[in-house]
Image (cartoon, rainbow over all chains, first blue to last red; front, side):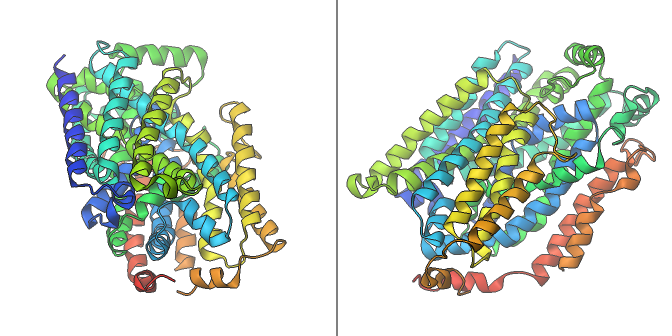
Length: 496
Length: 68
């Protein structure tokens, strides 16, 4: 039980940071939800990256690589290294500028102002909220899995998930955006520091990765994991649509508005691919090489199941199993805390949901005017408690793997929402009816995805590609056939 | 710059590395994985170039002007 002590210490530090941030707060909505638009350059870079790298990047990627091999890196990491910084450079800076100029805090506020609409914005809010919840569930699942494995089963999944949920909820509740940004910065530094150490220790324990790679290549059952021969190039191409979701995630879009100066984006877009490399490459390598870790009982059982069923198995815990087996207990605890740091990025998503609810629903429908700004912040905090409780109880019964949950719902849905952002910020001719058509299309497709089997494709492409293209086409076609917003509004947004 | 970006996007689809794991770079990194690791590093260099050549400088001044 030495290892969990390090994880508990980490959780206590995260909680303390949140309470420390609470002491610095001024009790105003913009201060709580956007840290007063005053986040500094390095906190902005590290926190934005920490916000985007979640249990999906750490546990989901190694679990996917365990089943499918090196293709995992190309599917999500290298495509993200190009597309996410591009989105931050061209869309993130514009979101920052529009937010600062017109005082907006959420994307829906921008859409409502830009397209002169009210209830259509509410429809967009509900879609964003529905798509974000699976991502929050992933964080709770990752926390429960990490503590269960690190403690050798002494802390059950339900208790680990509960502890993580309560800690995250507490520092978001108290610290708001400032606390979340500081904790995310701490988390990113911690994980980047210990990730390489974990790889070296596991490699040493397994007799060196060169040896492992040769053994995998010598076995016809495992050699395809080191190439992409079992994966269709068309499906691979289709996956490049997934990173488009990054800027459409409300927590990323909202975070873009916290920067003190626009020039802070420069460091972020340049360092972003490097951070992706540092996190994803070790995770994918460990996931693939775990196929030779037959001396780890839990992994041997997964390999036997995979061989017997000829199907992928739930393997989100393989990296943790390797760590628990090959690292000394105290080091496993330290590294487990590093993994926990990345897994707990659900904080910013919970805060984003709360911000969106209080701004896009509570304030928009008149409650702020009636009850005041302090009541708005209090409502936001209550909402945080409700969302976390919902995510926790759903995570207890979730059947899908972390990778599947993220790709099938959150990534596909938010990628299909990207055309909304592009239309609002770059196309004078876009209209609220076009936005509504795109939103309804994305909603319908997401509901349909819920009923499709795992690995479902359309003409060889993963659903995200036709969903995104369909949304863009609908926004375009409906916009050219419907009345535009007033010239005054268009001029306000395009006077730059 | 748009042309450079399109070419770089195309380079993500490295069909020439599809079916073979060899050579193993550093003795353990399969060719396809090593290629994408280098691709990721290249993306960082490309972003540095974009920040120099295509930075939307007018936006910051526009945002700092008094709101309408």
